[in-house]
Image (cartoon, rainbow, N blue to C red; front, side, top):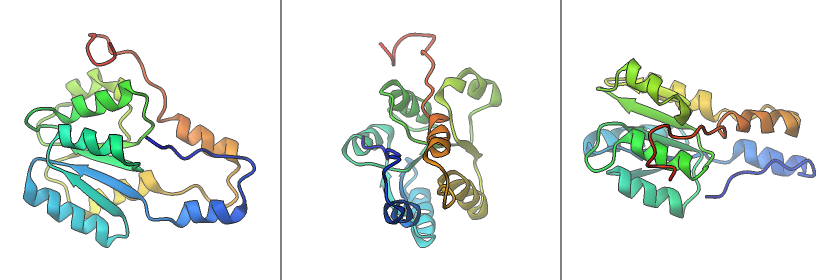
Length: 170
């Protein structure tokens, strides 16, 4: 997966383009109707949106294309959202993730802190809640942000702890 590297020799025009380019989102959910509604909403807000019906298809998309944000449902057949994010983190991909769930409890989320989720949304959620979460996460660095500060913002997503139960990182 391609990640944006912050280079101290980048021109102001390149930084401006990076701030203004459409952000790419992968939305993974097994419920086709919800997936379509939320994808249209995000596209209408100016984001480029790809969708996937399950975790396996989502993983394939992540391996083929670069995204700025992953939004995934948790409870899906085949591969859960937590398993998809675990796979993502085990390969050291730096990507913010919003986990959507109607069934995941706080205790289970606490057990998976190492996944470094950028946000969680409990179903049902509103269009406003989804857009606010996406905008907060994808807000570009302010003009004039020194590269070191921007790097530290990216570093928040790069810390990966070992999976304590084996499996995904082996």
